[in-house]
Length: 468
Image (cartoon, rainbow, N blue to C red):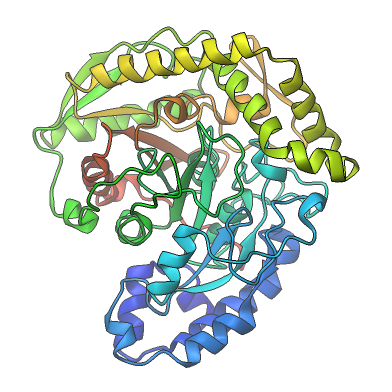
C-alpha cells in the first residue's frame, strides 16, 4: 500500500477515503511506516505525533470524510507552528522545553477541518538561513539526490512531502523559505499575500516579512489547503479582514487573455542556462494558449537584499532578546552572529530600510496596472551539494543561501502572492521551477495560471526514486 499512497495527491487520497478504498487509520499507518523508514536519511521530522493522529483517525466517521477537502488527510508543519500539547523547538536547543498551550491559527483551522497532524518538521534554526543546515537535528536533504540540499529554511517540510512522508505541509516564508525548497524538490510552494494567512501562533523571525506558506504536490491541493488556512485573526497585526475566496474555482479557467509580465532586469540575470531555457518554453506555452507577454521593469534591485537584512536582523534580535539573556549559550554560533549583526544596525538604518520597502511595494504594485501576473525563474540555481558555501555564476561569487533565494526575497518585502512550481528537469537530474507573482489578494489568478501550466504534460516531472 505504501507505494500506492505515498506520492498521491490529497485530492486522490480524499477520493480513496470516500470510496472506502482506504481508511484514515490506514493512511496514518502507511505514512508512519514511511517516516520511520526514511526519516533517518531525509531528516524531515523533528517530532512526530503519530499516536495522536491515529487516535483521531479512528474516530472519524463516514460523514466526517464528506466534509472538508482535508478530512482524514495527514499533513506536517514546520516546527515554528504551535500545536497544542506538543513541543515547538524552532529547530533550536533554546526551545527544548517549549510546549505549546494552544494551536497556531493555521493549525486550528486544519484541526477543525479534520486533518491529521503527523508531526513537526525540521528547519534552519529559527528560520535563519536558506540552506536548511541544522547542527542539532541534522540537515534535511533533497529527495532527488540526498547528497544535495533540500533548501531552507522550511527544509523539513519540503523533504517530508518530496520523500512521500506526507502529502502536504505548512512552512514559513520570510525570504523564500517555502518557495525555494519547494522549487528545489519538485513541489508546489505558495506564499499568499501578506496578511492572508495569519501568523499568530508561529514563532516569529521577522514580523515585517514573515508569511505562512504551503507545500503540496499539485496546484489543486494548494488551492484546497489555502481555502482552509486563510482567514482573519485580530490578534495578528498583519492579518487582513477580507473574505476568503473559493480558490479551487480558479482552476476551471485557462490563461487566455492574461497579461504576463516578463521582467527586463534582475530576474533573468546570472542564472543557469537550462533554467532560463525552461522558462522560455513556459513563455511559449502561455502565448500559444492566448496569454500576452508584456515587458516590465522592476525597481533598482541593487540594494534589495541589504534592505531585507537591515529589517530582518533588528526584528530577530527584538524577538529573541529575552531568550538571549536566559539561554544565550544554547543558540548556534551562526544564529548568535546574526543577532550580533542586529545590534550593529542603527535605528536610522532600520527606518530607511522600512521606507525602501514601502517604495518597493508601491513601485511593484504599479506594475500590475500593466499586467495580471509576473513570470520569473524560481531560483537561479538547482539544488547544490550539502556543505556548499558559495556558488559562482558569470564570474560572480555568491553565498549559497543568497543564490537559493535571490529571485524570491523581494516579494516578501512587497508582500505580493508568489507561487513556485516545477516545469522541467535539469540534465543533472534535479527539478527546475518557475515563479508566478500576482497582485495583492489575487491568489485566484496565480492559481489559475499555475494550474493551466500544470495541465500540460510538457511541464510534468518524474517523482524522486526514494524507494528504489
